[in-house]
Length: 51
Image (cartoon, rainbow, N blue to C red; front, side, top):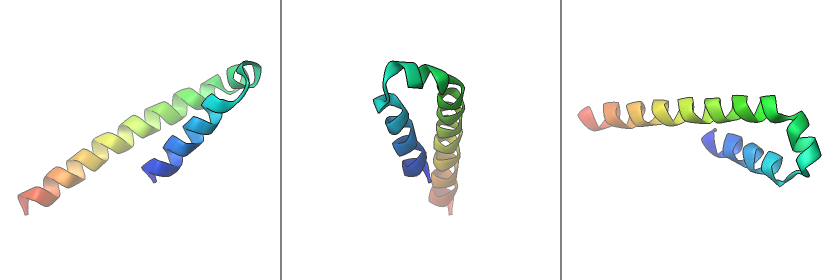
């Protein structure tokens, strides 16, 4: 899932500047979601190591 979101973010970054500015709010939301997924992944990995 993280890969899919990062790929979408890369697609947005590859767009021309004008179009990217129109999607700035989406980029912010994607970045926040990516960070939350990374934190969740780290927590899940840590929980898996404790078992």
